[in-house]
Image (cartoon, rainbow, N blue to C red; front, side, top):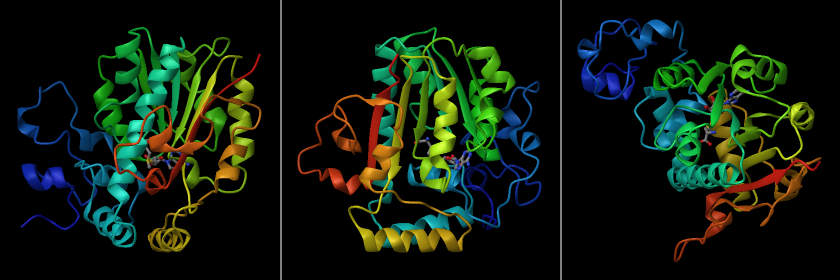
Length: 302
Ligand code: SAM
């Protein structure tokens, strides 16, 4: 029987456990077959709190990933009981991320800061951007050790992308990090991605965003997606309660509040819309509002 707190991938591979918080490497990789010079992932993640569900790992579960623990799956399932569209919401958000990164890359942006980047999944920012422009550079930022460890492992051998473990509410920890200083040139346009992360930032979100904006050169882009209560106020309130009980505070914002997040920037067409509507045609029969997520991209005027 799998141990209760093991991540799914560890249940599958039966790698030697080293405490409930140990974090194994990529799915099905089989730890014993790893090249000896490559550190094992659980040695890079000193402490993972598996007593509380974590947003990065629940999101990974919603996307069908393997880097999550029993507690994450239990709380995510409780959320999906209230809002069964949860996994579709996550997929729609990822599709928006892809289109927005392609849009920025096609506009000539070569540098990206991905705030609250999450656990790597299919179609990560550096892969999308570098497919458009091999010179594209990406700094990923997350405060969750599992997300950071997996990102670090994915990025080995890529000199143009790095991950920083930091709180996005501390812009100088991000922007003055060694990785940012090495990879980013703030005298040139940068794309700041805040995709499905600002709903974890409560009062003071405007000041946080202003600090990033003040470091950006004209022509930079701000990419935001943000979950909302606008479509299903009662279900959204229940989701907030379920998550609050597990220690995660969520701040849903309505469309007007999401538009205000772009203060100082100039929104590009089509403005703030539901994720399936941003520079795409919703699929036949798709209800855009079922994405429960507003999004937009803006440019910093000169
Ligand atoms: N941006 C990715 C996407 O849209 O696919 C991942 C979104 S996931 C829902 C939110 C991520 O934000 C998680 O990985 C979580 O750990 C991270 N996060 C939440 N609050 C954060 C904070 N204050 N500082 C850094 N990362 C944070």
